[in-house]
Image (cartoon, rainbow, N blue to C red; front, side, top):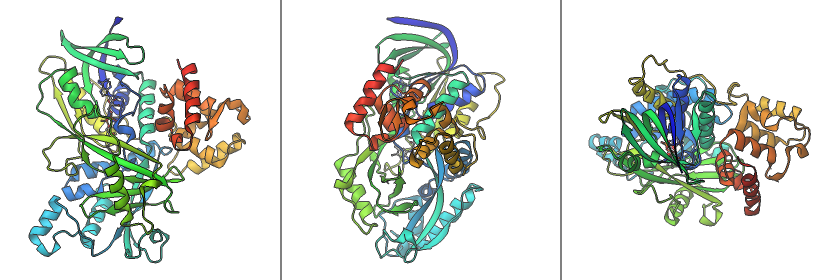
Amino acid sequence: MEQADTQLTDLFIIGGGINGCGIARDAAGRGLSVTLAEMNDLASATSSASTKLFHGGLRYLEYFEFRLVREALIERETLLRAMPHISWPMRFVLPYHPDMRFDSETPTSRLLGTFMPWMKGRRPAWLIRLGLFMYDHLGGRKILPGTTSLNLRTSPEGEPLQDRFETAYEYSDCWIEDSRLVVLNARDAEARGAKILVRTKVISAEREDGVWVITLQNVESQETRQVKARMLINAGGPWVGDIIQTKIRMNSREGVRLVRGSHIVTPRLYNHDKCYFFQGEDGRIIFAIPYEQDFTLIGTTDQDHPDPSVPPECTDAEQEYLCAFASKYFKTSVTRDEIVWTYSGVRPLYDDGAQSATAATRDYTLKTDEEGGAPVLNVFGGKITTYRRLAESAMEKVSQHFSDLPGPWTAGVALPGGDFPVGGVDELIRGLMTDYAFLTHDWARRLVRAYGTEAREVLGDAEQISDLGVEFGATLTERELKWLIDKEFARCAQDVVWRRNKLGLRLSDEQVAKVEAWMQNHRH
Ligand SMILES: Cc1cc2nc3c(=O)[nH]c(=O)nc-3n(C[C@H](O)[C@H](O)[C@H](O)COP(=O)(O)OP(=O)(O)OC[C@H]3O[C@@H](n4cnc5c(N)ncnc54)[C@H](O)[C@@H]3O)c2cc1C
């Protein structure tokens, strides 16, 4: 059945990844009426499959991407302050050995090869130090500590590594719970008046009499309906090109380069809370990161992945590659039979004609088209780290079409649950455990890391565990599920156990099936 929504919205956003939700929040906060449609779950595509770092991108310095690195470095602390529950500082240990050789074609290595031919294929210690010096100083750090050197022979960070590594550099970046970041942006957008539609696919958008007429399909009920908007934003991530060609049907010279990146998760490989930054002989780098208390996350890869309709998966070859890469550094080899989970995502990079997937720019590009009357803004590329700045740049373009819009406002405004100081998590955990005496420390920490100051609202008036209703395992209860359905747009068990939290790592298939059955009976 086709219904028409006669109301005209200012902005219609296609895509509930970090870029769509970040723009929705910013625009709603400036007083625009906003509707966002996501065909699946929020963050179901690339925005839940990242390495989960707010980082400047140390390796991009070798590509001379100074604008991107500087913007991202500055952003780390702005974001950390606005969401100290889902983001936290991390130290990265970069082991160095003078015999290391790299098959590298970056602009830096070509420059080095030209002026110091004897340095070809090497990334000398002074070059790494110079890069880290720039990393420390390009972005004006206030919270994060700077680079230090480590003696791996005497420090605990050296213990899991092969004996040939004697020295390392240690620098700062931040962790971010990527899929929660998306949901919290969507919630804040909604609180400021935006309509967030999940499981709603845009099947076409046409210009009629100076406005957009957009046809939507509810993918659960198959019902279609139409809405009208003054401006369209295409934040379709890997589908940005598909949307341009098959949904909006417009001619565009801009292209997207789809590059798959995969991660593996193993039981915890070492006993400290720092990450490793490993350099490979192929010129690439990977991270090994403490993950969800009991696990280690290793990634990523760079593989061209031309068709967005093919769901990305971590292939056998990618699993082998990541195990072999990490095994060049760890004393104990990492083997495929240790892998407990893998995930894979597709980077929607702006096609700058780079030779390799690794070299394609990670910066974002925003292109407006208004030839047919009503304007559309297409979003290419971007990082989780730069989503807020990308939204501000998008709003600069949007404001050309709406008079008297207020200026940027999101820097310094906390996301839901993030209204407490950086470093205040332990105090929140203590307070929560005092008020809800039945909580274990791990349970309280999980709730504070997910919901921040809102953890109390999730638990409500509960005085004992039984007040929280059915317990599904791994501390997931009926009351929390109810919150996720009512406030966080969750529709099925997969939304909950892989995106609102990562309890999928701990729950059995039977437990997940029980979550699913409960949700099907209780969702609206
Ligand atoms: C392996 C990997 C590691 C990464 N690591 C980092 C990192 O550590 N730090 C960092 O800053 N960045 C990182 N990134 C980059 C970052 O994840 C992406 O830039 C970002 O998530 C892209 O967000 P997006 O909103 O553009 O796309 P997406 O998250 O893919 O969102 C687009 C959404 O549009 C929806 N959609 C598409 N078509 C339609 C339609 N017709 N109707 C309705 N909805 C539609 C899709 O379902 C999807 O949910 C990484 C990326 C990858 C792949």
